[in-house]
Image 1 (tube, protein in one colour):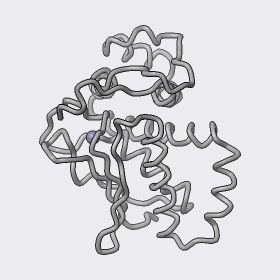
Image 2 (image 1 turned 180 degrees about the horizontal axis):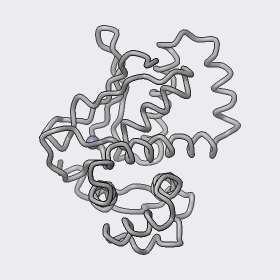
Image 3 (image 1 turned 180 degrees about the vertical axis):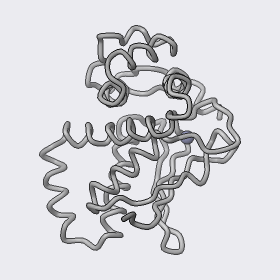
Length: 206
Ligand SMILES: [Zn+2]
């Protein structure tokens, strides 16, 4: 994990996460977790929308941990909702581009739509930060999104996968591309000693 020592999250992604967290938790909820995670500098002051370093990966992971502590048993659902809102924010910010992509997607079969949106997510992440390594896997007809530099669980230890926020974003991306909710399962997690965090797209729900 030495390569992640100095890992940073760029402003635009921190902004996305904080706007999403504010939508889901309300301003008071967000301010409370900013305080307990050592990120008070963002109270009433969202980071700018640029690619300069915003927070360290350690700080970013602490924010997730603070949300977990704040909500206790309800935290998983809350983190998934924040992840979902993050993807929606990204779509809003790039409305023109996403509109064109969305129209083109309607011509493709479901599975190719999933590939398309997840590949785009991986390249968008890599484009914002050269430290990031993320890719899409398709093995025995199962599609999964993988990141070996996940900041959600940076430096954390757990016996079970903990990147609920990421599960929410991947799920919302797949829903956006296909129009249907799919089951998303985190099968591998850096926090439990795996080489990467892996989010498997399961069957459509409902
Ligand atoms: Zn992770």
